[in-house]
Amino acid sequence: MPAFWPEFLLIATAHLLAVASPGPDFAIILRYAVRYGRQTAIWASLGIGTGILLHITYSLVGIGLLIKTTPWLFQALTVVAAGYLIYLGQGAIRARPPVGMAGEEEAMPDVPARRAAFLAGFITNGLNVKATLFFLSLFAVVISASTPLSYKVIYGLYMAVATAAWFCLLSVLLTRPAVRRLLLAKGYWFDRLMGIVLLLLAGHLLLSTFLPA
Image (cartoon, rainbow, N blue to C red):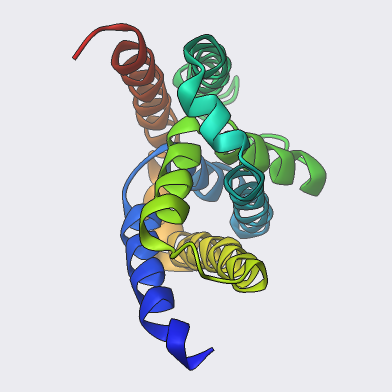
């Protein structure tokens, strides 16, 4: 294993930069943390981390390369992914102020079940074709062909755990009492903003796939 530490550190650095950059995963965690609270956001974070395993599997068994080199398959997955982001975005953008008939604050909206939050995170990450291409590139360019399969599996498990840990940490930070009170004061605006972000991400995904560079 010592011989593979430089490779692992390079992978960990590349993964950290990728996971910390804004994208659909960040948008859904911010929305869930503000609207539904810490536990729901953490379950969505665990779903995102588990979704990483899909991309790792694609890369290890060659499905990722098939997706990359088969235009119609890549485009089909892109449309599905964009459609899901549009579904999430249009729901968020219609968020209403929590004001009741008498002008009093209503209770928070129904919180999704743990399974629903987990699946939302899993699907959001699992349908991210750009994540598939990132991991494919990582396994093709950064990881040596001589690296044993067992080490590649360890790398993949690390990235899944690290991704879940990052978004769990983000969930905790966003739901600290002082931060959450500030966010909840105009929480529906954050919902709408995240809806716009998700719709823009969907549009960018479609344009970058179907329009020539």
